[in-house]
Length: 178
Image (cartoon, rainbow, N blue to C red):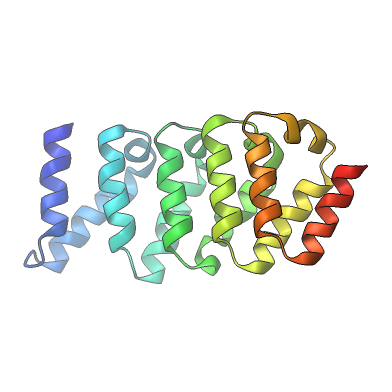
């Protein structure tokens, strides 16, 4: 609830709070990541935890928890923000499991209101190699022409064209022309 969220946020923002106690809270949050990330109040806490989680092992633990329900989370009105926050703030190598899982359903996710925002964020935030893989996957899709005219999919295509390398842009444009 809103009061609980406020208390947890204050504890996490308190610099004098013992690290071991913060880690206890982090562990509880990580274990309930799915439930918290798909809740309006829980999302506020998740976003703060994401920004404070700088240890690579902890980041990998968070991603392993997310992977269990990733497609459901990115399709959720609140959950999509949690994944977007991770993709934006954490290094590409740490986010590879997210990218790999989303890439297998990139066109399907590109036509959904919330998950399309995550796909756009992946294309914007991923390293050049991963971005190229996303764009190639989109280019090969038999649903490409439907994406272009779709109310959410067209934004994914625009983002891909804007962020693509010259070679990937040429590949996508050729695929669009066919």
